Image (cartoon, rainbow, N blue to C red; front, side):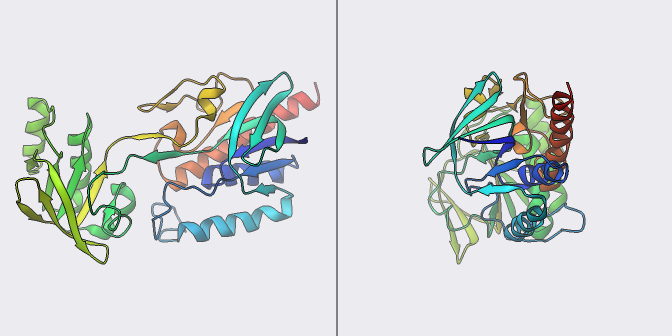
Length: 299
């Protein structure tokens, strides 16, 4: 059984930045990466100073390259199970290999619930997006539809309003909005359509129409959706962490959980979900992990 000071599950910005900090501090570190990323359809990331417009895949390639001088090990595999032991954690890979670590950092991220509407998959990443902060600027002044369900539909639509004056909120059926929320939409000049959507039409990934069950077709250029999220991995819950689809996995401001030695960083904690924030959380977690290992080494 291979043993490490720290095993990081998740090879995105949070996990790789944590590995960089810990590797530079001469800890033995293993990053296990399943290769599944929330932004796999994105052509560019935004809001990251000095890397605005950088392709996500290129960021990961460069980041892995920069880990090499520090002896960080990479394993392209999914972790299927994790158990807390007296001396740390025991993990099982998809290939059945058993690994152990004194500290465990979960940077496994989340997944977005995608619209189950005919025609959506051909548009995703080209003219259909989940994040206004990531792709709003590139779609400014276009005819945008906010496709949303749940308690945050008005908030989501209002977040998109600065990007265009031609914005419509579509809830794909009746939704329970308070009078105050409806009044807020009206103040922002956002019409509300509660009809059921039959399909999305487009050409070569470009949205052209939203077609409703009654046959009406609405011309639109871009769709932003918000249908909730869920944890990509169940490891945090299996280890005993408090986890919910609304609040994510619970961790303190140093990314530590209630489970000794277990840390969580990145989108899984439901903080601001941007690449630069995930990377920063990875660094925060690494600082705390390093201090725990340092004190244990010289106890």
